[in-house]
Length: 176
Length: 156
Image (cartoon, rainbow over all chains, first blue to last red; front, side):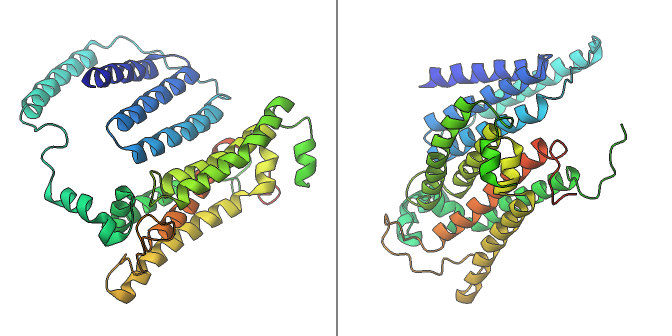
């Protein structure tokens, strides 16, 4: 199982690098989509089908939106010069991060162990206390409904902003 | 223009192969989205995923038949209206819990776990979130891909 995760992680890292470095916009969008499908497979193998379903569907829709929005625009990547300072600082901070990560993750317990008191309560009491068989639905819409409200409002505000920026009505016509 | 004329117009949208296949498939996608929403408290899924599937069924129609179908089926005004109504319904369900004691109290009878009508407010919240998310993503797709290319009657 662990080797599968390593293959997926490697695939996702390669996809991210392709998405950053490629010159063509469409290839970058498709590489981002590949990384998203890797994430959803990861969630599926970790035993979280709810998140995997959401991830794969949002990935499909965002891929369609991005392709539809970018395919008409012929924006090539900006050619940049070789910047030795940026590369040296980047490598330096990468080294710092890896050192800190090795130091911090060495003390961590294995994944999912020990089960915390709150999650033990959720797992044992969801069906009796909320009536929902799907424990995830019981947690996000009963125990933690306030968090879901915040998430919904974040989405609401971002959509509102996008619609205000992209609206037709009240804009001055473009002079050609 | 009438929606039947738009769907039969050969100059709009993709080829007849794509149109036929998507005409067959789109209802199944819609039903699957409804299933994911309504059974969110029993099987994996829920309001967010189901809402996105509902939005995808409309997006498929737009991609196959062109942007005018979108404006005829559900315009940008109604998309934002459903978005607002879904968000409002979710908040109202939360405030109704104040009758029994606190915000987001599960005030409806829980019923038998595993039945379709059970779990109190959870299915209602799922439906509200699905309407909100689906309409919001559909509106964003309209804004990013249709606005500025096709002039709609209501915007002029």
